[in-house]
Length: 618
Image (cartoon, rainbow, N blue to C red; front, side, top):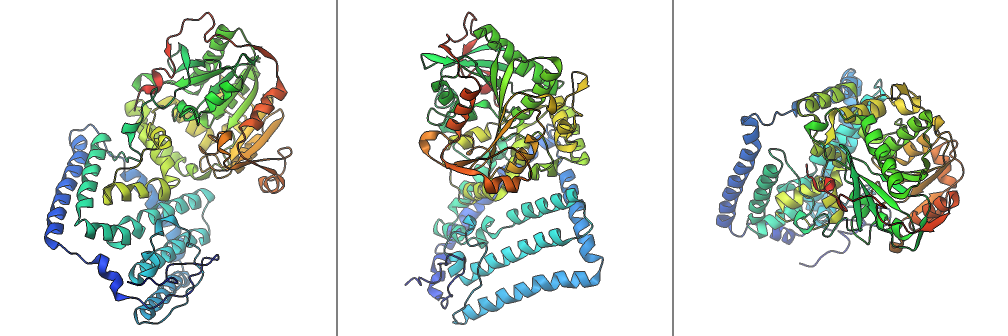
């Protein structure tokens, strides 16, 4: 048919310039051509769905897995009930809420009827025009799908407004209610169902349902792979292998403790900085995010700039590590690595980097060292690290007494938190991007995901020891003890004010895990000079940003004082990667050079990098 150019386009403000009358020929791609083939494939789909159900039921019937899904659902219902109580307590408020929603529905319905009746319709500006989920042109051109799209946004916006306008809620309850509403809205989006997504509908008709057969087969495989839980595949994992096409920077494992291996990387320059560099990554993911491949590797880049790089590779814990707590990771991780560096290089003074929760541990360890007179770490760099959790974002939704108690009871049975639980929590922060598009692509379109190294790393989850994870949740997210001077390490409280060494504190502008404002506020609690830098993009891409890619930007400004918004408004923007800026900061603190060191010095290495700890899968 002749395509109407106006119908599927929008102007810069997001307004559609007027719908043309609906062309009945547009429904042709939605008409089933071979009902018999479709019926056969639907039967095969049901068969595969039965296999998926069996894979889910089997470990539960055998007692290998006990479901705790009901308890989070109870919390969600309890939280949203408090919002409902406000609106239902007064009949006038109830009527106001109903009128607001029904009036919007009536407006959409009237426009749709006019379009179907052959009238040209002028539509209002659309604040959701750039939502990638609704990119298919039939979401606008086809009146049926356009009605669904508009009704969906009206309903989800209305539900969010009910939360924001409800009075008498404490801030944590309001935060949880808003988060739950967003999760529900993401789940019920019409893009997630065959009959309400034009692209899915057309593909199902064109293939006579073969896409659903493939999708349900993948669903059964993914539930089986998750041993009764859905292990959502986000990438083709067969295309990647650690040590073969990931984590390739040459080096050796010099030492290992119960909680970590310590890796030293081979020098590539004739001279190196006198102070070695120790990287403390998070243990909730694996360290090779900083060594994905040679083109993206911060570790390789740092080696090439003349740093003698050491990295802590955390153990993927099991029941044997149940009692390994925060102090164990501080002493048997960071402390052990510092001892190894001294033995391998003879150096007492070290530059250190901590990433995410690895940075939080590093900050707490520095406070412990300050109290004990340990001066080995002379500068500290923190990547997307929170030390104060006042503005910790949506992860605080999972950190109240009831939910932490639920997590602790689950960990008591196994000795650890399963890595998939933490991965799911992170994915839920951006469910519309990290969960549902893969659900649609895999199980409704029946397509294998594309190979992507970052998503492979994201799926390579790690477990958390029970004692360590409980300490982290209670001391950081629940009670914010680190900045209050109440975190107990070594039998006494530690204080960030005791940390007098220079700090390079890197935040990322779009971070959902360690928001830039949270990192800024935390900067004020250190006792020495803090250089706060904000990079473009998010928690991973903002950090893993090689200079030769010339992507994103970073902002630098004055001292960490006043409000974050004022600092950001006055900060200087510089295009490209922050890596060179950080390297110059390191050299400004101490630029002494020495001849390149032999990896390990006189130590005998255990194995080649990246070591065996990082290869253990959860």
